[in-house]
Length: 231
Image (cartoon, rainbow, N blue to C red; front, side, top):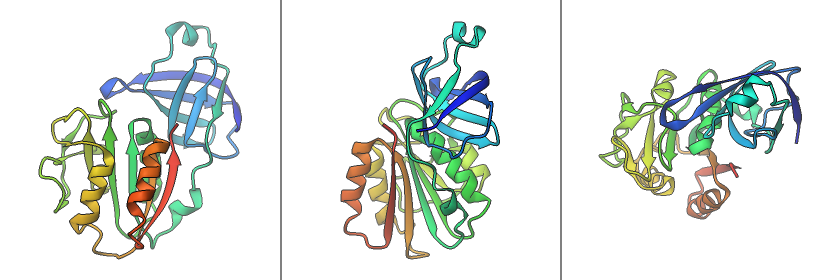
């Protein structure tokens, strides 16, 4: 666990009650975790973007205005293992990204890295317990075989030419109503995996859901799961 000193901090509200925390660090981190804690604020957040001494984190909880005014948040702590940076430069392996709630942050980080390097298929499935940190838009890319109600997508992923579909516990418009495991099952059976034949999955999900993914995928030798627990 790496503790980083904060030089400057601000926040930006997002759709769905989320916040982006913009953090300037005193020095660049040795490695990037996919989950962080701001101990002085008691806030957990997921990695969203990083460059040199700048971090962007995705949070469900806003920073108290008094903490911002007093610059009282002095540190940010990595709470997980590191992001698999070398894997993101692999250009031959088809990749499926899974992310739920705060896990959408590191999913977007991974997607951006993959989109600049990967030459084979990338697909993403995103889940929201309540709402998404973006405005759901009609999907531009086809995804035959998936539930008909799943016609919405994350605009940023589509800007990066990454087809994606959404699931929601609340049955949000354009989303499959249900959990990400059910949507993953539909993806497996949909034929999206026809070419190429071997896929890897990066899953940024709660630990219990990652364990369920492992059980679900035991019978599919063409899928290699890389779980990243978001709790």
